[in-house]
Length: 177
Image (tube, rainbow, N blue to C red; front, top):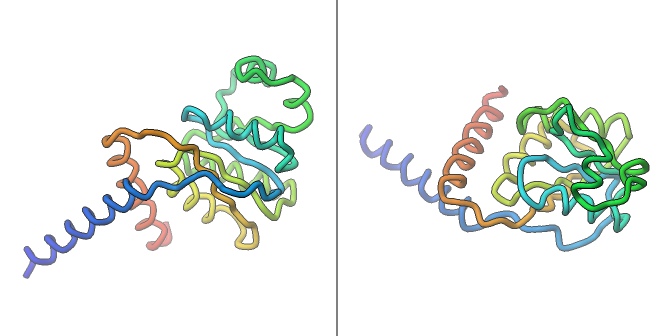
């Protein structure tokens, strides 16, 4: 009986992992205007995608969450080939976050101060599910979150680690932690 139960759990895990790895979130197909764009640092293409969205005026403002304290806006503008004026008018840097959970808390505080009713979340496809879960838990329920995943070619090891982190956070959320 116990062996069957554990076999069933392993089967569920394998099926879940297959779904997680095969059906990665995709970029948003619409350019619906949102109150702001928020991007989590840490992956190639994320900041570029968010800067493109702000430059296209699909949102009023951008928060880059999880920036190293030593980074200055002019340095980012130069690194990403964007005018300083874009950073002066439309971009905030968040220095408080060190992980996905603290990214969500930083974003929620920032969006609340702005009075945003919608945010576009930009992160890597393999990271989107957990980032969105954390953001949904941190934001008020009346704030609409639009997922905009940056497509990548994640390694199997990356998917394995992220799937297990996602499961643990999902279980913790169910337990109220």
